[in-house]
Image 1 (cartoon, rainbow, N blue to C red):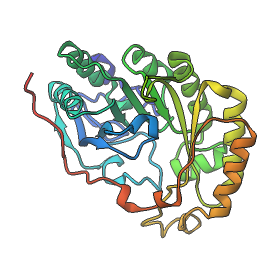
Image 2 (image 1 turned 135 degrees about the horizontal axis):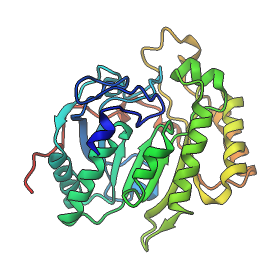
Image 3 (image 1 turned 60 degrees about the vertical axis):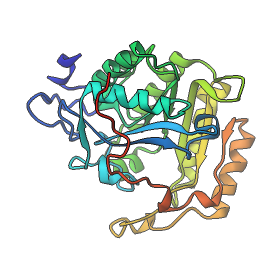
Amino acid sequence: MTALLKNCKLCPRACGADRTRVRGLCGANDQIEAARASLHQWEEPPISGTRGSGTVFFSHCSLGCVFCQNRQISRRDGIGKPISVQDLAQTFLSLAQSGAHNINLVTGAHYVPQIIQALSLARKHGLQIPVVYNSSGYECVETLRLLRGYVDIYLPDYKYYSSYYAARYSHAEDYREVAVAAITEMVRQTGAPQYDANGLLIRGTVIRHLMLPGLAGDTAQVLRDIADRFGDTVLVSLMRQYTPFDMQDWPELDRTITDDEYADACELFQSLGLAGFFQQAGSISESFIPAFDGTGLEECKL
């Protein structure tokens, strides 16, 4: 697994950096960096459940969205606490012992080799709850194939249909093609959604789409594409939580989604026969952004 970091092509940027010596384009080297581990109540209901999702927020990201709410940790110079594979495994176990319904890996593509090692170690020490892979959707199929057998639930974004918007706001003109291939592989691995006796998701793929101001037409194309490609083999989460801050360089994004914009998208969602989740207006708030202060990242006690 370490060899994958010496000519890194784990993400679609395929920068080829030797991350044992330098940081890659995403900002990560061969040391895991994370910013928080905690029980998270604000995922989709069958993921958060009553006790919360055991969420680990990893530092850095390959995508670079201009509106990222986690920009403190996602940028190349993002903050984070260095932790070992053993520490990460201990963190997984501690979250499970705290009552987490699942382990939720947020933006972990650039750490997949280390995540696999940590999950293997944690399972040897009794970890049994499902694993959620929470992703921007901008993923390499080859990297996702490494996760087969380790991930039970995929939670990818499908951010854009238009290559213009993908290039303008996430510096990734090829976003749609990459994300569609990635989500196809995710669905191939998980199959249709499966639930336990308490209604908690234990297997499946949930596609998230965050609505952006003025992009209602793009949202409509994304929803139609999901319906055409995946139908009832996925759940869809239509998100209205976009919260603008420090967006002076992007004035067209410096507002929230209107009630009418969201209502129109919900109507289309239902007419397409999609199954999944809507959000209330109360989800629009910076208060939903956690403190990235290293909380919950455990030292190894294995």
